[in-house]
Image (cartoon, rainbow, N blue to C red; front, side):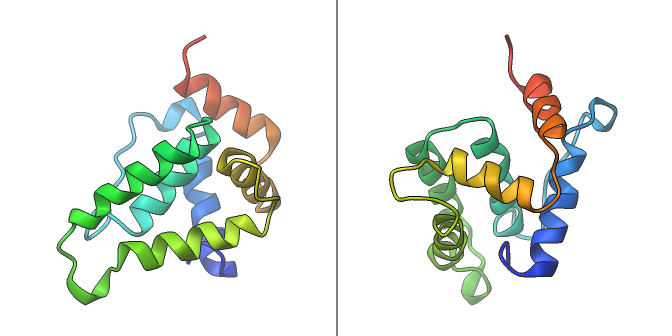
Length: 122
């Protein structure tokens, strides 16, 4: 999970791949196309400033996954967001909380700026 030491280390390593122009194009996938993929996409989108409502809507798409008992989208989403909620106040956006999460895991401000400059038009 995103809030276990090993899970966070993996997500940080994966996020850092998106901070270097040399790694593009990048293909994101996992066995079911959700869960870890959904978590990484949530972090990427939040780091770009996507609204909380859009982040929730994007995650809801994973509900259409037929992963059986292995993958329960709401449970995974709740685990992710409840952990992020501990990183800030209720009125703060997930964009703010995710930035704290990434920085606390070893992503640098320079890497965040690089990622944003690659992904966002100015």
